[in-house]
Amino acid sequence: MTVKESYIHLHNLRFHAYHGVLAQERRTGGEFVVNVRVAYPLRQAMQTDNVDDTLNYAELFEIINKEMQTPSSLLEHVAGRIGESIFRHFAQVSSVWLTIAKKNPPMGADSDGAAVEVLLER
Image (cartoon, rainbow, N blue to C red):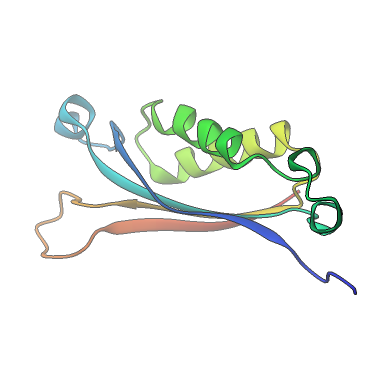
């Protein structure tokens, strides 16, 4: 069997964080949702059933959590920091697909939020 591509996903991670351009956003914070998909070679773990042969998704969450708790004006900046941290921590990750959504952006619209989405490659 050939594994062409393999990924680890974390879906709908919810955070209260302090990202935004407006002073009110930085003071009171808001709700954010993060989705991430990282390309990681899973073939060995498929054969061995050993957790040491895969990416630890709890560690992946902690990287994202740490960066989400560091205030930024722009979600683009947060996304860049998360990507850099993932690549630094996991040498075998070849790409990161990341979406960060602000659930209630201050734009006067009735919506489910505004988001940035990036595909980062090593």
